[in-house]
Length: 131
Length: 236
Image 1 (spheres, helix red, strand yellow):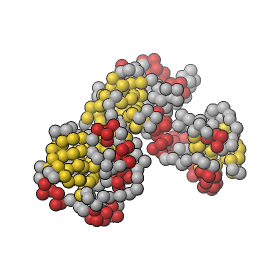
Image 2: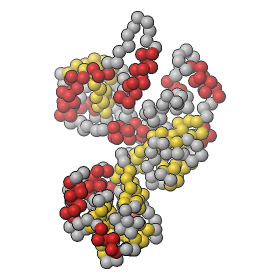
Image 3: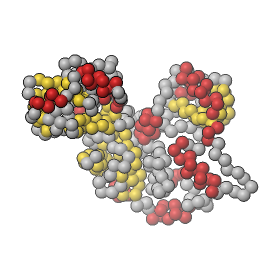
Image 4: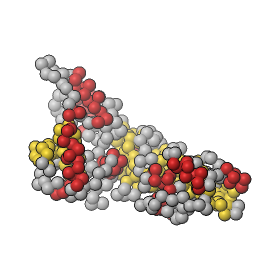
């Protein structure tokens, strides 16, 4: 099951408990440790289609545990280049390694200035502390 | 009386109170702990006994009614004791090496073996024949509602409670529409089968095992097929 609570410093965060790893004009997206912990053991990732798009602050997929289903909110807008098949096939990998093997999608940013709206790790930790 | 249906069940019995008798809701005076699983009986140091029997006895020094019942499809017992003894009984049972679990776990277990849940699969609007519970009704005897049950049995139910397994990755949930008629009454992800499972009322013509169903999962059509109940047995 899930590892220790952690929020890597090199990531950008969205208050809806999503993270983005910015790599040039692309970004890898996923859900945070807090999100996977709140949902419990995940049993399903309803992935978007490659070639589709994400819109900042809007849902682009769903993650589901035995007890609950939750929208996955896009921290950034972009074109979906790649979907993590492992997260679909073995959703528990999102619990086990939310920032690594449990990443969800890779996008090409359509508006890189949106990155400025995201939270750094300290600001996101403050969000978590209020939950 | 059981948690979610307490008011309805009490109201029903109270309305039919026989003159000279008094119906009283004593639910708060008792607690029921279900200890379930293949090693449950041994863990409590109890002898085996036939299913659906009960007897007074002692468990860790606390007087309890030991019921050879449960709603998980597993071996085990349900222990009923006075409410004031419940915390001590709980602590003793947990100390014996049992693992506490919540309703989510209970719900996956009972749904895997297709035990209907009142409020989901059976309600005041459903009937025993359509729910596949005709075996609980002695239609040759007289009781409340027997005429209607005889009619449904003779004419054949319009809908039947069918069990299904998802063919696509998706978790069916209560109240999701079934395309072509009916809706999901219970749904979850089966930990034993690692697939979405559920039950729901479908037109009788669609209730045979093997029939393909389409479940509307939040606007997405997901394929499923009807299976024979129970969905899971230990031998499969």
